[in-house]
Image (tube, rainbow, N blue to C red; front, side, top):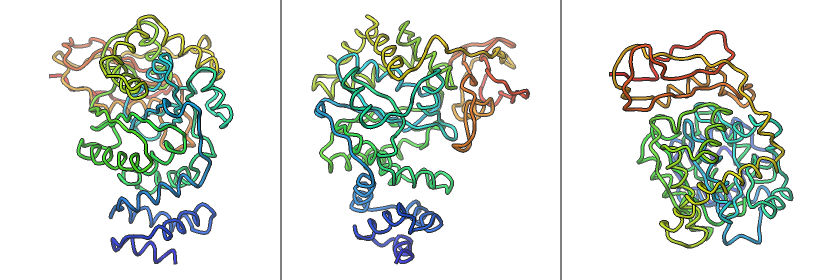
Length: 405
């Protein structure tokens, strides 16, 4: 029976809802083996799924675990990024939105490959508790209006099991599988309104805008089926976002935006995302939302919410330190810094100890890269253009990260 289902996908024949349910529940129970699921996922990756099949997958994923519900359901809003190099927007956007009275629940993941994970960034804060039970999530949202935690074992466990297999079978970048994974967790998490930061370019999971537009279209159709509201913001991730790549370094930069109003591309991106979330939740215009967002940044209410959030989840910002001597990287020639390659910077940060190839790999929370220049800046030969933070003895060559003309 299971082999016949795999054969149907391979032949591009439409699966029935029962066939999908039987295969997926069989996998969760251990009746369908990893090698069978691997073949199933690869067939989907190559041949795709119809909308009806996608919706059947999402329903099965959701029903494999528990679903959260909240009294604040109508105003509860969630934000999701498809991942990018130096993307620390969650650390900034969520306290901004919560400071404006909009409750937010954000279940995040760890970094793998070239894109960093919010959970790794938060775990670089000494003491921070990433694990939250469903009851703790409910209480925290009631107490301070926000929570950022790792996905609980109770939420869409089928997604967690299949994602681990997708990562090692080359089936991560399938648009239907990405949409199913994202939306099953989002809908099970209890929110009805979502803002999606759809990233494309060399530093993102999907490289072309056409791919992320197709993904957004599928996500929107799933949202509509579940009577949810989704909005989409598109971001070119061909260069790193902000000045830092690396877990603790990115926390420091997020704090600088909230505490010191550090201006730049990261500040602008976070204002944009937060404003969409506030407008969607409060049902006000984007212009009104932008004014409210800037106000809580300037009056430090967002910074106060950040501190309350970190303390609530037992993080201790005063104990956070780098404890690594920075190593300067010097420009190899004079000229204009034409390009900073996000993918190369991400590979470098991983080599320095900031990333992992598998979930079992250890990372150094203090490792990473601080960029001292932006694209378009003029640099002199031997001028400092970046700092490297690492405990590794061998420093990789960085020339491929920068184009100086």
